[in-house]
Every structure is written in structure tokens, then in C-alpha cells.
Length: 118
Image (cartoon, rainbow, N blue to C red; front, side, top):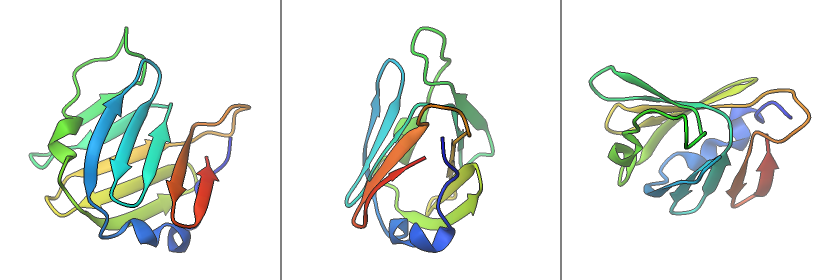
């Protein structure tokens, strides 16, 4: 639906600790201390050992997920490209979320500055 906002608008994610990951049939929710992110498109988790886990957000067709390894980890960096948001964690793991320019929203970020739709 929309590209991600500029990195400066998302820097408040730095220092936020992931408390919970929720897997829904067609979305994934990441609940941080101050922020909630919901995504309906695929996401990629780069584990600390270098393995990339792609999760498609379609429960019946999705493969394994090791997203639970991110719980308790704190965001160290934020990188934004137009249709990709990558969160770097203190452990060295990374989480990449994707948007598109289609007709429907790809997700939301509900943070201290309000709701961002991507």
C-alpha cells in the first residue's frame, strides 16, 4: 500500500525490546515494550548463525519459524529502504518486513507517534 516512512521517523524503535511474537493465520504481530508491529506480507528473519528464515504469513502453507528467538532481544538499529524495513537486534539477528504498492495494507506500526500504515 505504502512505502515505509524515512528512517528518522522510526528511530524510536531503537532500544525497544521484543516481548512477544503472535502468529495469526494471515499475519504476524510483534509486540515490543512501546510499539506493536503487524505484518501480513512475508518476512525474513536472519538468525545469529546466518540462516535466513522466510515466513510467508499463510498458516496452512508456511514453513518453520524461529521468531521466538527474537523474544527478549532489543532493537539496536533500523534500516529503511522504500519497501523494506530491517530491524537489527543486539544479538546480531535481523528482522526484515516488507511492504508493497498494492491496493491493500501490508501492515501497521503502532508506536508513540501514532499509527503508520505500510
